[in-house]
Image (cartoon, rainbow, N blue to C red):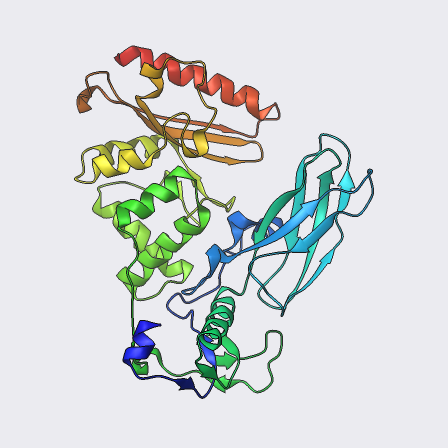
Length: 370
């Protein structure tokens, strides 16, 4: 509010517009699975997001199998959305298999799937496809609450060209102003890139990973579309001396698309190059140890002297488990650091059994460079 006060603004004639055009192109990759697009890890976004584009639902199972699941929309408030619930209470042990089927093409979404009868009530996080509009909605409400009158409504930029005040309607659209003609009244800065990388890797955050890729595309090519961002990514790999011609196929920043594939050899080359870089310390620190971030519960039966030396990142889908990282030597000498990449595809057994065997393999390698 301080920057508005300094600018002498006491009332606003017009709309509060959330402008996400800093990132151009679609919010998601076309090869993401439809059910993933509605999840908290498949939100996607443009240049202006809100609450990581997550929509929360207070969820509880019915009394018996086949009953309706109780779901109440929570934060953030999205009154323009119409939610329906086709989901059912499932048998004991089925877990949480709820998926929000949604799109940014219309303000309608349906929750489908099963929620186990034995599951405790929880907050289910799904996707909000109108992050820029949500930001404008909350900012307008905040201004009014602080005594600044606003004559118009919340709005966003539709199709990169038009100011849209009503989600789901193309009536009354007005041409959006060019960004170069906008006057900046205030600004803020993000955390340092090292901190962003730390959060991304520690919690395996797809939203952050996609934002990093698209920011790279914007910086290097002038466009944050996925095509341009992937071109920028290839340039970075080339500048690092890494050959991706036969070892890598990339479709996004997070790995959510099944059109991604990367060889273990490439991961080892990448990790080796990063170990020699000036960013080595912060990069290694960003990778969780067993018991941290997404690796909680991993290698719990191993000695602390082993767990403390392992830094690794996981990647998983149904039937896929991948783990890559470093095992430091006891004395911390870089030359004795073990670099590894383990990838298992198309398995049909228990996830926990597979992960348990991988833990044992990592522990065996750790015993080689005590």
